[in-house]
Amino acid sequence: MRGSGRPTPERVLSAVMQASGVSIDTLLGWRFRADIARARAVAALILRRKAGLTANEAGRILRRSRQSVHSLTNRAAASGGDPAAAELVTHALRLLLEPSESACSTSKRLPPRRPTHSLPGLVGCRLGAGLTQPELAARAGISRETRLRLQHGRPGITESNARLAGALMVPIRVLTRDPQFDRHVTAGFRTCSTCHQLKRLTRFTPIKACRGHYGRCRACRAEAAKQRYHSNDRARLADIERAGRNRPHKQNAAA
Picture 1 (cartoon, one colour):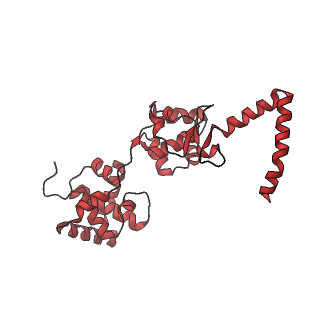
Picture 2: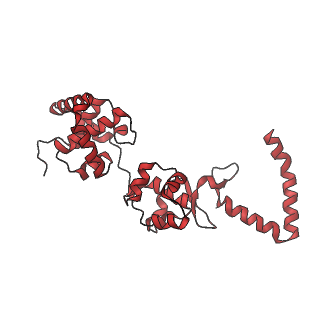
Picture 3: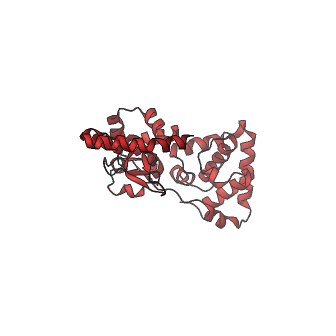
């Protein structure tokens, strides 16, 4: 139970921000520059020792895992080899002792915690696709840290989940096992009306003079055109004639 005299997490973050000059978005983000990592470690140390938070509670505030909070706390506690870290701890604690009116305003500036969702179907889909974990991370465009976090069963944010679903070319509800999850997908992905797979928006053909895209993905459209071309002579001749009409336009556009 935290005592009434202990600082609130908002005040701790405000003091660390003032002492280090690191913004709240950077402090809670994923950049690993030396000064940012030092400020993050100091925040973890003060949240644990002065605010009386558990590692899980501090992790929810700093958007880090429990293991990461322990590592950050140990790093800041062993500040004998880093005079800058020791000085930052002293400065932040001094600011905490001063009456501050910025705590409320700081709490209002804190960005909302993005919703996370676990992916119980990720391993099965990855093995079914024949991909290793690094291959899937490279195809989805996610970082090594995110891949390690997800492979240990920790929840991921909506954007990472959508990237993984697009890389595996499966509906995102297959990964989350939530039939209603597709409505959370960001605008960078959509489900093909033919193959019913969630794919990146770049895999859909844009509609001219419009911001929209065709409902079928490029692969399904190409397969349909191939079948139409080989279905009968009349359709094939029509496609050849249309291609001949469009060729001058493409040449002019290329020039």
